[in-house]
Image (cartoon, rainbow, N blue to C red; front, side, top):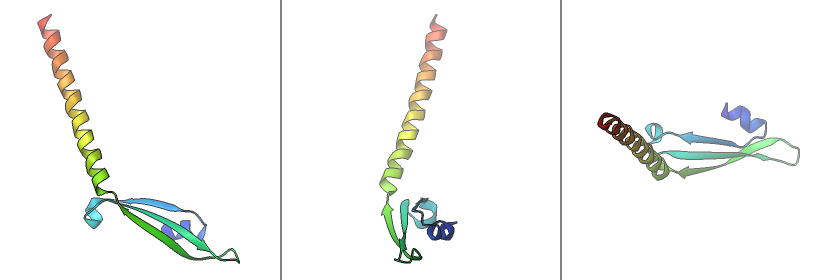
Length: 81
């Protein structure tokens, strides 16, 4: 899949999960095209986004906790009526 995207001159962005490399990374690969319009290589940047990924996980846990707390409060209010 990656090779086909490079040969058809498309930038590829991929998230590499923490389970594969120990940290969550974002890979951006751009094909290099010569004057004959041929793909002759690629330029790649890999960014460590592990902290961003960890923050997203914590925010999701917090959202779930708030939803559960809200549901519990609604049950208490309904029972008090």
